[in-house]
Length: 380
Image (cartoon, one colour):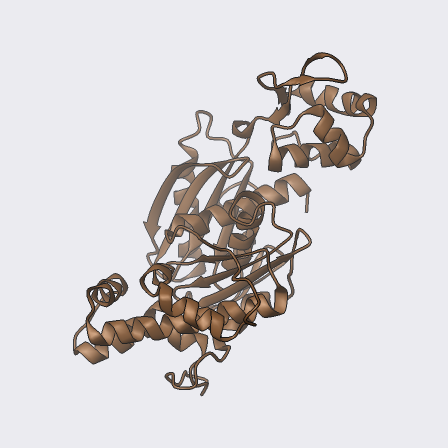
């Protein structure tokens, strides 16, 4: 792993992290945030400037305390690069990012099969393709995310989309590359990216709800992701939402997995129309006023509204972030969503601000890169 962050400790590490997440920052603001005197801050940042980890950027307003223009400090995002790869049941989707998770390049490869060795080889090939966008091809980390239960940033205990049980994916990747590798649940990774560099940035509390192949939920409270070994089990997928919904494979009526997944919506509308349809076609038909599509989309919108209400009632978030490949439903069934949301909220409660993520899988791959960035920066 290339140097820079790992030797940092204590106040120096805190200073660098503040600048990474919110920079450029003036010295006065940095002193306030980390509780250091101007002299102590200068002593800490001097070697960081000399090493190139930090740089002084264009002069800001005059600092009245010293009578000269301030020179905010910033990091050099392009000093380190990371690859993030999101695995689906069919493809590996990858991005190359800077230290601030700015996407430089994207690429995608199909999975030849679900065997761990074939998947690892595909990841290695995709990583090499993305690294080629760097002049020196050097990477500071590789993050891999997938839908499933992951332990120790290495072992995939269970991944139904890949038919995997107890696959040491991180160890398998060591045979292909000497780049440090971390493996994570895809929702955990997306929550991390939303928290550090996305729509949740600056919020003391926010929740992330994703709809697509599954239904996911992530929560950040007091600037920390709420995590547990059960976080990757998709527990919210069987939260009951409507009493008149379809019965799922576990016997639940009207749960999130039947009402909000792309497959659930496609199956019900396709059955009503007597033909095969895509998810986007379903939503297009709903917009055009086709009765069956409109009915299913509005019911899904009400269900999503009730799910948002449940999350808001229990956690009182500053904002709710909605993502996943099925998130276009929010726009198509917006009125129905608001109806469902307000049905389960107190009349005096304010609707939580709702922010939509890009539905593209690149957003999930960027989340995988952020897990690698966090491991690189935090050292754990």
